Image 1 (cartoon, rainbow, N blue to C red):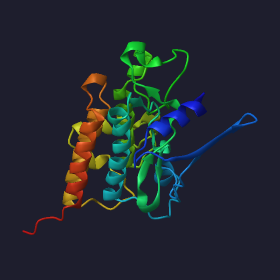
Image 2 (image 1 turned 90 degrees about the vertical axis):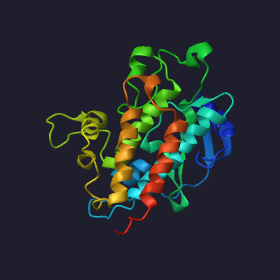
Image 3 (image 1 turned 120 degrees about the vertical axis):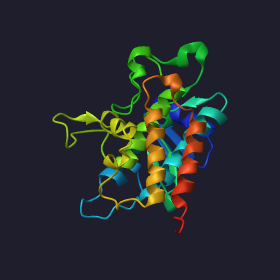
Length: 253
Protein backbone atom coordinates (compact mmCIF):
# COMPACT_ATOMS: atom_id res chain seq x y z
CA UNK A 1 0.00 0.00 0.00
CA UNK A 2 2.80 2.42 0.91
CA UNK A 3 4.56 1.44 -2.33
CA UNK A 4 1.49 2.36 -4.40
CA UNK A 5 0.95 5.58 -2.43
CA UNK A 6 4.53 6.72 -2.91
CA UNK A 7 4.56 5.80 -6.59
CA UNK A 8 1.38 7.78 -7.24
CA UNK A 9 2.49 10.75 -5.12
CA UNK A 10 5.94 10.95 -6.73
CA UNK A 11 4.42 10.69 -10.19
CA UNK A 12 2.14 13.65 -9.41
CA UNK A 13 4.64 15.78 -7.53
CA UNK A 14 7.17 16.96 -10.10
CA UNK A 15 9.34 19.65 -8.51
CA UNK A 16 13.05 20.40 -8.23
CA UNK A 17 12.88 19.95 -4.44
CA UNK A 18 11.05 16.62 -4.47
CA UNK A 19 13.01 13.46 -5.27
CA UNK A 20 12.39 12.43 -8.87
CA UNK A 21 10.90 9.00 -9.58
CA UNK A 22 12.80 7.32 -12.43
CA UNK A 23 11.04 3.96 -12.47
CA UNK A 24 9.31 1.27 -10.46
CA UNK A 25 8.91 -2.50 -10.37
CA UNK A 26 6.58 -4.86 -8.53
CA UNK A 27 7.38 -8.53 -9.04
CA UNK A 28 7.23 -11.71 -6.94
CA UNK A 29 6.11 -9.79 -3.89
CA UNK A 30 9.03 -7.34 -4.12
CA UNK A 31 8.32 -3.65 -4.70
CA UNK A 32 11.11 -1.32 -5.79
CA UNK A 33 11.10 2.40 -6.56
CA UNK A 34 14.04 3.79 -8.52
CA UNK A 35 14.78 7.45 -7.84
CA UNK A 36 17.57 9.85 -8.67
CA UNK A 37 20.87 9.47 -6.83
CA UNK A 38 21.29 11.91 -3.93
CA UNK A 39 25.02 11.64 -3.30
CA UNK A 40 25.16 13.41 0.08
CA UNK A 41 22.62 11.19 1.80
CA UNK A 42 20.05 12.39 4.31
CA UNK A 43 20.03 15.60 6.29
CA UNK A 44 19.77 13.46 9.43
CA UNK A 45 23.04 11.69 8.65
CA UNK A 46 24.85 14.95 7.90
CA UNK A 47 23.72 16.46 11.19
CA UNK A 48 24.07 13.46 13.49
CA UNK A 49 26.28 10.71 12.07
CA UNK A 50 29.49 12.49 11.17
CA UNK A 51 32.56 11.74 13.27
CA UNK A 52 32.88 14.08 16.27
CA UNK A 53 36.39 14.88 15.03
CA UNK A 54 35.20 15.82 11.53
CA UNK A 55 34.48 19.43 10.68
CA UNK A 56 30.76 19.98 10.01
CA UNK A 57 30.05 20.44 6.32
CA UNK A 58 26.77 22.28 6.84
CA UNK A 59 27.48 25.88 7.83
CA UNK A 60 24.88 28.45 8.82
CA UNK A 61 24.00 29.75 5.36
CA UNK A 62 24.05 26.21 3.97
CA UNK A 63 21.65 25.00 6.66
CA UNK A 64 19.19 27.80 5.97
CA UNK A 65 19.42 27.14 2.24
CA UNK A 66 18.67 23.45 2.79
CA UNK A 67 15.66 24.46 4.90
CA UNK A 68 14.48 26.73 2.08
CA UNK A 69 14.81 23.96 -0.52
CA UNK A 70 12.81 21.51 1.62
CA UNK A 71 10.16 24.13 2.38
CA UNK A 72 9.69 24.76 -1.33
CA UNK A 73 9.13 21.06 -1.93
CA UNK A 74 6.52 20.84 0.83
CA UNK A 75 4.85 24.06 -0.35
CA UNK A 76 4.56 22.57 -3.83
CA UNK A 77 2.73 19.54 -2.42
CA UNK A 78 0.38 21.71 -0.35
CA UNK A 79 -0.36 24.40 -2.93
CA UNK A 80 0.46 23.34 -6.47
CA UNK A 81 -0.65 19.70 -6.73
CA UNK A 82 -4.30 18.98 -7.51
CA UNK A 83 -5.62 17.85 -5.14
CA UNK A 84 -3.09 19.00 -2.51
CA UNK A 85 -0.84 16.41 -0.85
CA UNK A 86 0.04 16.17 2.85
CA UNK A 87 3.38 14.42 3.41
CA UNK A 88 2.61 13.25 7.00
CA UNK A 89 6.19 12.27 7.86
CA UNK A 90 8.41 15.32 7.44
CA UNK A 91 11.72 14.75 9.24
CA UNK A 92 15.44 15.20 8.59
CA UNK A 93 15.75 11.55 7.49
CA UNK A 94 13.24 12.28 4.70
CA UNK A 95 15.23 15.20 3.31
CA UNK A 96 17.91 14.06 0.88
CA UNK A 97 20.95 16.10 -0.18
CA UNK A 98 22.21 15.89 -3.73
CA UNK A 99 24.91 17.50 -5.80
CA UNK A 100 25.73 21.06 -4.66
CA UNK A 101 23.74 20.25 -1.47
CA UNK A 102 20.39 20.71 -3.17
CA UNK A 103 17.77 19.39 -0.73
CA UNK A 104 14.80 17.31 -1.84
CA UNK A 105 11.88 15.82 0.08
CA UNK A 106 11.48 12.05 -0.20
CA UNK A 107 9.47 9.11 1.21
CA UNK A 108 5.96 10.08 0.18
CA UNK A 109 4.66 6.63 1.10
CA UNK A 110 2.62 8.03 4.01
CA UNK A 111 1.32 11.01 2.06
CA UNK A 112 -2.39 11.73 1.77
CA UNK A 113 -4.65 13.84 -0.41
CA UNK A 114 -5.92 16.88 1.50
CA UNK A 115 -9.70 16.53 1.38
CA UNK A 116 -11.75 18.03 4.23
CA UNK A 117 -14.82 16.09 3.08
CA UNK A 118 -13.34 12.76 4.12
CA UNK A 119 -11.29 13.96 7.11
CA UNK A 120 -8.13 13.50 5.03
CA UNK A 121 -8.90 9.80 4.62
CA UNK A 122 -6.89 8.93 7.74
CA UNK A 123 -7.34 5.49 9.24
CA UNK A 124 -7.74 6.00 13.02
CA UNK A 125 -6.03 2.64 13.58
CA UNK A 126 -2.93 3.78 11.66
CA UNK A 127 -0.25 5.83 13.39
CA UNK A 128 1.25 8.40 11.02
CA UNK A 129 4.47 10.31 11.41
CA UNK A 130 7.55 9.89 13.60
CA UNK A 131 7.87 10.51 17.34
CA UNK A 132 9.45 13.87 18.06
CA UNK A 133 8.32 15.33 14.75
CA UNK A 134 4.62 14.48 15.02
CA UNK A 135 2.06 17.25 15.48
CA UNK A 136 0.69 17.02 19.07
CA UNK A 137 -2.77 17.87 17.71
CA UNK A 138 -2.74 14.51 15.92
CA UNK A 139 -3.19 12.70 19.24
CA UNK A 140 -6.37 14.69 19.90
CA UNK A 141 -7.83 14.97 16.40
CA UNK A 142 -6.57 11.63 15.00
CA UNK A 143 -5.92 13.02 11.55
CA UNK A 144 -3.17 14.93 9.80
CA UNK A 145 -3.61 18.37 8.22
CA UNK A 146 -1.35 20.55 6.10
CA UNK A 147 -0.46 22.38 9.33
CA UNK A 148 0.77 19.03 10.70
CA UNK A 149 3.49 19.13 8.03
CA UNK A 150 4.23 22.70 9.14
CA UNK A 151 4.74 21.51 12.72
CA UNK A 152 7.09 18.73 11.62
CA UNK A 153 9.04 21.16 9.46
CA UNK A 154 9.37 23.50 12.43
CA UNK A 155 11.02 20.65 14.33
CA UNK A 156 13.44 20.20 11.41
CA UNK A 157 14.27 23.92 11.59
CA UNK A 158 15.13 23.57 15.29
CA UNK A 159 17.21 20.49 14.47
CA UNK A 160 19.12 22.43 11.80
CA UNK A 161 19.76 25.35 14.15
CA UNK A 162 20.84 23.29 17.15
CA UNK A 163 22.40 20.19 15.63
CA UNK A 164 20.54 18.27 18.36
CA UNK A 165 18.50 15.11 18.04
CA UNK A 166 14.78 15.76 18.33
CA UNK A 167 14.75 13.90 21.66
CA UNK A 168 17.85 13.91 23.86
CA UNK A 169 19.12 14.84 27.32
CA UNK A 170 20.23 18.47 27.46
CA UNK A 171 22.73 19.94 29.92
CA UNK A 172 20.06 21.53 32.10
CA UNK A 173 17.72 18.51 32.13
CA UNK A 174 17.90 15.19 33.95
CA UNK A 175 15.51 13.34 31.67
CA UNK A 176 15.46 13.31 27.85
CA UNK A 177 13.56 16.27 26.46
CA UNK A 178 11.92 17.05 23.13
CA UNK A 179 13.78 19.67 21.10
CA UNK A 180 10.66 21.86 21.04
CA UNK A 181 10.52 21.95 24.85
CA UNK A 182 14.24 22.75 24.98
CA UNK A 183 14.55 25.34 22.21
CA UNK A 184 11.34 27.35 22.13
CA UNK A 185 11.63 28.84 25.67
CA UNK A 186 15.11 30.16 24.81
CA UNK A 187 13.89 31.56 21.49
CA UNK A 188 10.91 33.42 22.95
CA UNK A 189 13.24 34.79 25.67
CA UNK A 190 15.42 36.31 22.91
CA UNK A 191 18.24 33.90 23.75
CA UNK A 192 18.62 32.13 20.40
CA UNK A 193 22.37 31.79 21.00
CA UNK A 194 21.62 29.10 23.63
CA UNK A 195 20.02 26.99 20.90
CA UNK A 196 22.71 27.21 18.20
CA UNK A 197 24.91 24.26 17.25
CA UNK A 198 28.15 24.65 19.28
CA UNK A 199 30.12 22.75 16.62
CA UNK A 200 29.89 25.75 14.29
CA UNK A 201 31.72 29.07 14.65
CA UNK A 202 29.91 31.94 16.31
CA UNK A 203 27.66 33.44 13.62
CA UNK A 204 28.51 36.82 12.17
CA UNK A 205 26.17 39.69 12.96
CA UNK A 206 24.08 39.21 9.81
CA UNK A 207 24.02 35.42 10.29
CA UNK A 208 22.90 35.91 13.91
CA UNK A 209 20.08 38.19 12.76
CA UNK A 210 18.95 35.64 10.17
CA UNK A 211 19.13 32.78 12.69
CA UNK A 212 17.09 34.72 15.24
CA UNK A 213 14.47 35.34 12.56
CA UNK A 214 14.39 31.63 11.68
CA UNK A 215 14.17 30.77 15.38
CA UNK A 216 10.98 32.81 15.71
CA UNK A 217 9.69 31.21 12.52
CA UNK A 218 10.36 27.73 13.95
CA UNK A 219 8.58 28.67 17.18
CA UNK A 220 5.53 29.75 15.16
CA UNK A 221 5.62 26.50 13.17
CA UNK A 222 5.55 24.35 16.31
CA UNK A 223 2.83 26.37 18.00
CA UNK A 224 0.24 24.22 19.81
CA UNK A 225 -2.75 25.43 17.77
CA UNK A 226 -2.62 24.19 14.20
CA UNK A 227 -4.64 26.90 12.47
CA UNK A 228 -2.41 29.60 14.00
CA UNK A 229 0.74 28.18 12.41
CA UNK A 230 2.05 29.79 9.21
CA UNK A 231 1.32 28.22 5.84
CA UNK A 232 4.21 26.68 3.93
CA UNK A 233 4.01 29.62 1.49
CA UNK A 234 4.63 31.98 4.42
CA UNK A 235 7.45 29.71 5.61
CA UNK A 236 9.10 29.82 2.17
CA UNK A 237 8.83 33.62 2.04
CA UNK A 238 10.38 33.93 5.51
CA UNK A 239 13.25 31.58 4.68
CA UNK A 240 13.97 33.42 1.44
CA UNK A 241 14.38 36.60 3.48
CA UNK A 242 16.57 34.81 6.02
CA UNK A 243 18.88 33.33 3.38
CA UNK A 244 19.16 36.73 1.70
CA UNK A 245 20.00 38.38 5.04
CA UNK A 246 22.53 35.65 5.83
CA UNK A 247 24.22 36.30 2.48
CA UNK A 248 24.40 40.06 2.93
CA UNK A 249 27.88 41.24 3.95
CA UNK A 250 28.01 43.46 7.02
CA UNK A 251 27.96 47.19 6.35
CA UNK A 252 31.29 48.88 7.02
CA UNK A 253 31.18 51.53 9.74
